[in-house]
Image 1 (tube, rainbow over the protein chains, first blue to last red):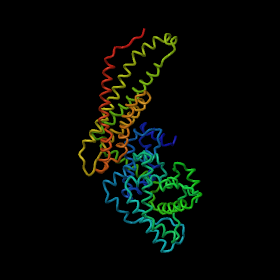
Image 2 (cartoon, chains in turn orange, green):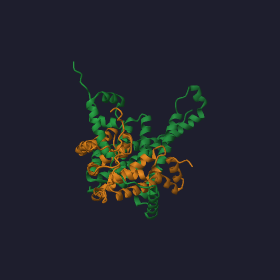
Image 3 (cartoon, rainbow over the protein chains, first blue to last red):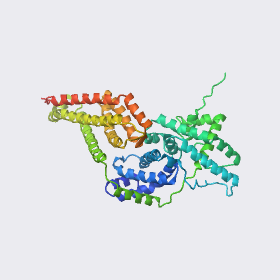
Image 4 (spheres, rainbow over the protein chains, first blue to last red):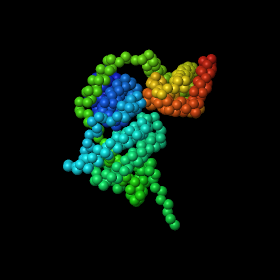
Length: 203
Length: 265
């Protein structure tokens, strides 16, 4: 069986509704990551994922075979997340009761100060993301975490290219301002988070 | 003589970071030689490193099966369609399909009527007579399809403009219409461009932008977001332009309908 998304879509349209499960298997965790970062807690993120695939199944006749299924699904997911944020703003603002997990730390035995600082930074990141507008958050998450092009993001959000670029920039600018002090302190604590290796070879 | 250095803006540097600068090579060359821009980029990288470390709960390999089970359950339980979505997508999908066939037939007809050499035209006379007789019919079918499309578009826009504004606006009904209208509109617009109907193409272009915006917006809007869409429709006078175009199309349709069939000898 040809396993491309387009081929599976054709199968579902041909009457094999169970084939849709293959698309869910492939894309559900990605949509969950996006949803979680958009809405800030697991329960709401799971709701967004379910709603996204429910709508995708219902609207599958509108999917153009030449388009990218993942990008099309992102658009539905982003709109579902935005809908939920409008319907349940209080719940969306409330972080997970168990708190964020500890980020992966390259230091095998981090000091108590470092652990405390890590938790503080992540709390600050979560807060900074929440303070973005819905459009800024969506644009930033799609660009930064999901690697979507500016053009595709614009189509998903119904924005022209120039407006999309500016929305991404505004989000980055706000994040920088919110995290400025933390990042500077982090350089002193010796943090070495993540691996933002994009376009950094010039440094 | 001092040389003014044109640094990329902060926005340019963010886009450069993502590999989407207007001129990635030129920006690279500048950054390699500029301490100030390198410092800015280091600041960006440090911020992004902190953001990248923001943890996301992991959903295991069985997550897809869980989601599908819940979606299947919901598909079985939920009513198939609301009264609006029951007939709108099917009707408009059918209309969009008809529009595709009509436009394809019209364009094919126009292309097949391209001027031939005189000797060739005489040799092909029987086919040309038939095509000439069929041309007004094709044109009328196209005009009817375009007129219907403009009328449906008016309904969507007028409904939006006349909606009472509340704190939360549910536009899912209008969205389904808009999503079905976009492909047909795109086809009509492209045909208008190809056939030199610039005025028609401009109106359809403005209409398409609004339909796409409606289709791509969240289903529930705040009053401010809803007002933004309405203001855009109002500022561009789209409803008025569509009405004018619609009446022109109808007039043309009636003229074509009353035109006697041409027969070449």
